Amino acid sequence: MIEVLSARAFWCAPDEKILWCHPMESTSGKVKYIFYQVSGLDERGDKRWTAGKVLGGVASGVAGLALEAISPTDGDTGNNTPSVPRAVVSGRNRDCLAASHLGAWQASGANEKYGREFIWILTSHRLGMLERSAKEPESGAGLLGGLKKKISGGSSEQSQQPHRAVELPALTVHAEFPRNIIANIDAVEYKVRGHEQKYLRVSLADGSTIDLTGRGGSAYSAGKVDRLLAMTFGRE
Image (cartoon, rainbow, N blue to C red; front, side, top):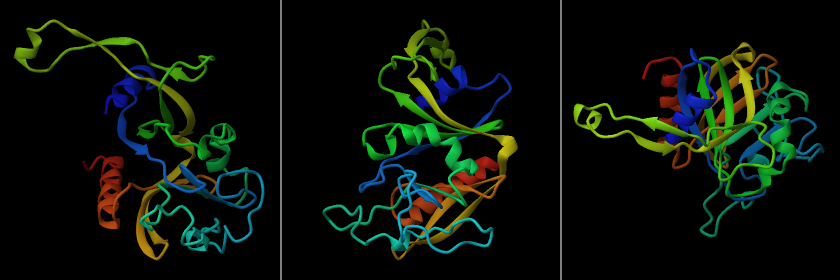
């Protein structure tokens, strides 16, 4: 992914290692990117209570995933294929670390719109949610890249060729979770609309969590989660 080059060039510190990058694809339905399971917030992360969307709890005391509570047709496509959230945020209250660090992004209304290119990047220093920017925003705050970097090939044949100027995509930083607030990274499974779904879980210091999965069938997405977990701990 060319976004890795942009992140390494313009976002990462000199000693910061990128462990993996994971695109956050949109889904159909009211929630386009992140499904919120946070007491005091509705499923889109708005500051209001939506009865029936958050039910029960898990062993940690954090609100448990209650996607079964969603109507079976909510977010389904024309062929009745259920839309499974690719990212889920859970927490005890709206001020939890997971929700608060995503607060500015959520307030922008991005969770209700298609066509954005968000990407999660885990490094040795932090977890970040960035966006590939189609154009430079009016304010340069948070914008990275967009500059031409000279990238040379690795083979002897390529080394004899003149350097090519490649324009790296600009990246906007929407959220950062420093390593000192990340308590654990593991894999979890639970039922989503009657089907087992595997997620990579990033647990934060206050017990709130960010769960990430990929598109495709349960077996395919589980394989992607297993690979992310392996790369997290340098096993791949």
